[in-house]
Each structure stands twice: as structure tokens, then as C-alpha cells.
Image (cartoon, rainbow, N blue to C red):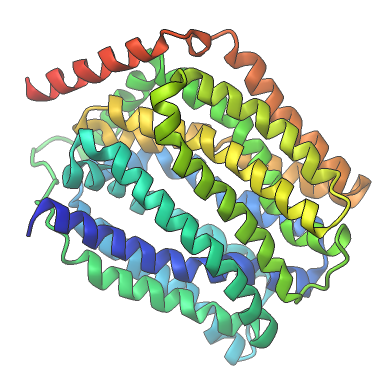
Length: 417
């Protein structure tokens, strides 16, 4: 099987899984809000879904660099299928509880941490360092195209079917993805050795942390992501709440899916323009400009007078938010040696996503206490704080691109040596 065919198989598996997950992304928070009517619990669910990356990112990255990547990807998909399938099964038996809904999302996200760690290394193996930017762009474009169609379809499914029944599609998609991933042309990546597994894992974690801490570009990109993710936690955690309390929809209104579709459109725009921006705009300025736009469009989303304006503002906000995230991911993958891909990327994402659970939890509490718009405007401070910090780093320099190119060349030389 050729490398190109291998990436095509990998992309197909991700597309199938993303299609199913688009349904759960709408159905799960809708089901929770139907049962509880609580903005605090809606925010808490988003916060809990972000926590596994914070808790497991370090060990998952180190272990994924030692485990067989194909096996890890496959078993993570099967595990996610089982967790999601438990929701319609419990509903059919009359046993579904709010606690199960609050725990299923975080459990699937915990499995995803290990999947994600293995996927970073698998992608580089399949396409090479030079192909990472293009492959990431294709994956992001496919993901966001699904995001345009999936949430709208999910909204209709949730409106016509019971939400627990709708998430069955996600369980089936994970199972189909698992079958595809078993055919990936990946050699075993698990190293041998007689050392202590715990000691070796801790040493691998420390190596990844040192790489991030010492790198003059990856370090600031990672830390600035915290403010970006703070706003993401707030917006995502309050989408259903905003639809109901600001735009006057019911919890099972099929139009709620339009908000996820608008966000997907914004992410698609970001994925489309990022390669062009890389050719014309200093890479550090992309991140700083994205943070500034994040705060501006978040204020527009909070103050939207109607549905059409709200959808437009949300799409623009997501485009800015995704630009910051994608720029950091692409640069990080370009600069990181292959044997460090899992631990460096999961560790960096763990740190960058650190603001998401806090943003979701704080915004949920503020929405109940002071209103949705106040909560969203407060969340914008996260992007502004990151922007202020970013202006003191090398990312503000026009010639930072030369540093990135030099570091990438050094990474390739180290790999060859």
C-alpha cells in the first residue's frame, strides 16, 4: 500500500467518525438541557469534556510514542463506539440518567486523548514532515465541510427522533472507522528495552516538556493558546443556552444545529486561507491577529440582535479562533522531530487547551447569575490577555519566519542523524 493510499484510508476513517460525532455534538447538550434546563450544567459538561486532555495529555503522549500506533487508533475507536452506544441502550431500558450524560462526554474525550496522541505520529509517518501542512489542511477542510452539513442534519434528527436514538449514528461511525484503521500501513512503533515502564514513561514526558519549554517559538504559541481556548470553552458551552435564552428557540428546535454549522463554516474559512496567509503574512502575526479578531467577533456574537447576525458573528469568531489553533498546530508539527510528535503535540495541546474547561465553567455560572451576554463578553478577556502577552514575545517580529525555517531544517538534520 502506498503512502498516498495510506493517508487516504486514514482520512476516510476520520471523515466517517467526524460525521457521526457531528450528531452527538448537537444531541448530547440538547438532551442534557432538556433534562435539566441548567446553563451551569451545560457549561460544566463542556468543562468536563476538556479536562481529560489536561489530566492525560502528558502520559498519553509519552505512551503513544511507545505503543503500536495502528493498534492504539483502532482500540480507541472501538472503545468510543461502546461508550456512545451505551446512551441509546440505557434510554431503551429506561435507565438513562443525567449522571451518565455528564460522564459519557468526558469518557469519550479521555479515549480521544490517546487516539489524538497516536494520530499525530501516524500522520507524520504517512505523509512525512513536508506533507504535514497540506495533509492537515485537507483534514481540516474535510472536517469543517462535514461540520457544515452534519450539525444541520443533526438538528433535524434531534427534532424528529429522540436524542438518544440520534447518537446511535455516532456509535456506528466509530465502529466503521475502527475497521478502516486496522488497514493502515503503519509498522509497529513500540520500542523494546528492559527498563522500568514507569521510569521510561516519566523520562519520555520530561523530554517532551523540555522540548516545549526550550523552544523559542513552540513555547509562546502553546501558552497563548490558553486565552484562545478560554473563549472557545465559553462559546461552545453556551451554544444551546444562547439559542434558547437569546434567540428564543426551544431546546428541540431543529435550527439549533445552524449554530454548529456556522461555526464549521468559520473553521473552513480558516483552513482555506491559512496556507495563503503562510505565504504572505509573518507566521507570528497570524496568531496575534487571530487573537485580536477573536475578541472583536466574540463581542459581536454576544451583542447580536437576531439570528442572521448571530450566525454571521459566530462564523467569524470561529474563523479567528481556528486560525490561532491551526497556526500553532502546523508550526508545531513542522518543527518537532518524528520520535517526539506524540508527546510534544499532546503536551502542547494539553497546555493550550487549559483555558477551555475554565472558560466553560465560568461562563456557565455567569450565564445563570448575570446573563448570557455578560458571560460571553467576560470570556473575551481571555483572548485579550493572550494578545497582550503575545506582543511581548518573538511572534511580533516580522522575521520570525526565518527562525521557524531554520528550526525546521534543524529538526530534519537531527532526524537524519
